[in-house]
Image (cartoon, rainbow, N blue to C red; front, side, top):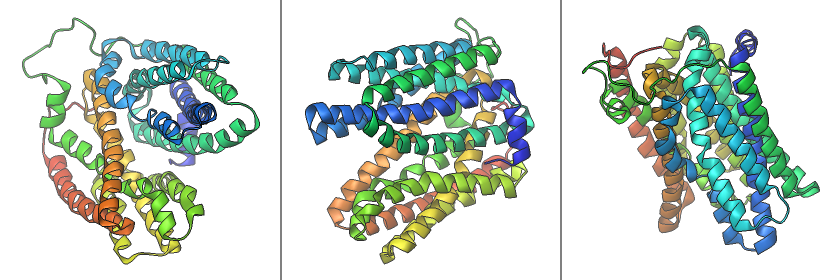
Amino acid sequence: MTTRGAVRELVGLREFRAMWIGSTVSTAGDQLAAVALSLLVFERTRSVAATALTWSLTLFPPLISGPLLGWVADRFPRRTVMVTTAWLQALLMAAMAIPGMPLWAMIVLLVTVLAISSPYLAAQEASLPHVLPPKRYDDGVALFGTSVDIAQMAGLAAAGFLVAHTSPGLALAINAATFVVAAILVQTSVKHRPAADPLGRKQKSDDEPRGVLTLMVTEPRLRTLLGVRLLAGLAMVPEGLAVPLAASLNAVWAVGLILAIEPAANVLGVALLFRLVRDPAKRERLIGPLAILSLAPLIMFAFNPNLTWTIVLLVIAGIGGAYHTPARSAWMRLLPDQYRGRAYGIGRAALRSSQGGGMALAGVVAHSIGSVTATIAGAGGIGLLLATQATFAWRRARGRDNTKAVAI
């Protein structure tokens, strides 16, 4: 996270404060809803498979809606997009909380809520460069990221207590209320700005990039930053194998601890990075080395570490994962404003796919070779090679005078 002075300055910015509070509150509410719906499905069906399927549905809609709906954040005023989608999510979530709502209807509503979150998040991310002064942009992105991690952990912790002592319907109603809060905060505090790339707009010159995919593939810095962020698919392998890893250590009770290490260590890593390195340019130079640090410790799982050393290795790797924050801000800074919403949708879907695909593939490999630790070590080895290559690619890309991507 950022320094106290930077946090005070950020919180003092009305537009940023509204977006930050709304995002943090709704993120915590989403965790309540996910746990509540899963528990409700289990209570009604007594099916472990149906419960697991319901939980997995919280991951898939953004993979499709991100690339398909990200354009909304560029074609329409971004405040309007955020307010409209937040109100829609509030209404749909409130409908889910109606007593006696059929399970199939609740699942359809959940998928819809998650799908329309993509335009909201794309509009929010694309608005940050306008809401924040240039010198505080990186700090704002860091505060957003760490707050989301903390909100997710707090929401999951509160969900168990709330659902156990009340009812799933109350948790769903609370999540609906968080969307109302977000909508009101954005409507009353964020300035209206015209659409970045309104419908019917004609390109000004032949030199302007023809599309967001063309830009993301051809611009070396954007391509390298996206590639280095997709290494998260390998870094997340220990989380995907948390249950069999804990069982192999004869410490099944530690599953929750293993799952909590990555977000907690990431928050710590971001805090250290922004406290020790104040210059954004220097933080950008550390993207490659930190990416290497996020994967290299996994190689040590080849030596079958005990629980203590497992925790140490995962903490070190999690701290290295702090590179995502400067990579995220640098990527958005380099994008022309008219492409930010679409690029965010595509990038988020790619990141989610790499994480989910990496964990799924790791499960298959671990089952095939019969060793969880060897699978994690293999992911670390492959990741180390790719991260090293990406480090040199990023250094070369930063050294080029490429003017196709416009800085804010």
